[in-house]
Amino acid sequence: MTKNLKFFLVTFLISLPFWWGINTSGQYLENFFFLRISQSPQFLSAQVLPSSLQNLPKKPPEINAKSALSVKIDKDGNQKIIFEKDANQILPIASLTKLMTALITFEDYDLSEKITISREATDQPEDSGQLKVGEKLSVENLLYSTLIESSNDAAYALTDLVGEEAFVDLMNIETKFLGLKNTHFVDPAGYGQDNYSTAKDLAQFSEYLLKNKPEIFNISKIVEFDLYDPDGVFHHKIINTDEILKDYPKIIGSKTGYTTKAEGCLLLILKDSKDGSTLINIILGSEDRFGEMKKLIKYAQ
Image 1 (tube, rainbow, N blue to C red):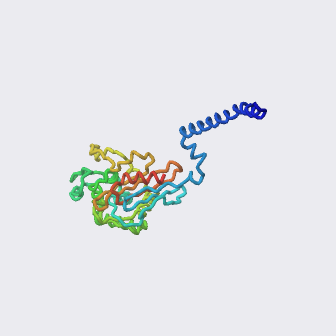
Image 2 (image 1 turned 45 degrees about the vertical axis):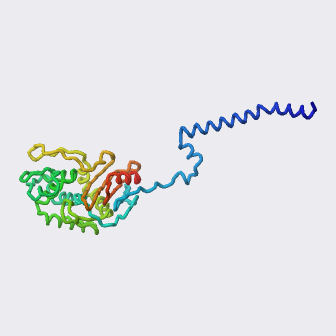
Image 3 (image 1 turned 90 degrees about the vertical axis):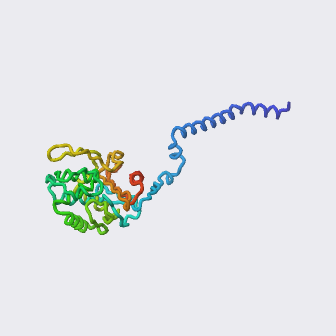
């Protein structure tokens, strides 16, 4: 064996532990990273993805409704549009009408006053209010029925003290006073085809109610309510027409609407749990108003 060959063999044997150690360490590090990634997917994004990719904006929801709007109002009253789709389009609003009916009632009536139910009121389409001709209910009782179960008969009964025509005139006068330029009413219930507004007008109107008549939304968000007549006799249980009220504990107010022409309409206001701001969300002309409202809220929060 030559001297050079001996030197090579000795050097090779001495270096074996070193190369074995590098291989072992490499395998250890590889196992470590795979373990961390499998336990926490965020580990990869936090360590590998550039910061510009970690804060990508949310993808806007796919809303098939004719019109939709989500507006955030912070504690100082500053507004920011979070989502908008044809928010200036004039559309029928169905029973969202009843928010204006409630406002006129609060402004011009004594809530304890009794109203004798007329034939005209009970003849309205749908009878969710279960009213009977000649019975008496307080204005407050009728408001609960109008706002919670969206009763057409209760909404019409509320006009009986001044007459339907005069009541609707008051609704349109209030509309002009509030600057709702693309809103108009022809009846107090909204089942007709000629009550119209826009998502932007409705958002503006909702903000006014929040500041000046929050009692309306306090009623509208009640899930169930036992209604009694003025003599203390149980009348019926009122069930809210908004199917997703229980899904959002921070709800401030809500109102549903539906007719064949208007399709599904929904207004829902809630507190943003992150910063305490207010979110006004509106869906008009939808085949899936509750599903699309959920999409809108998820995106807005």
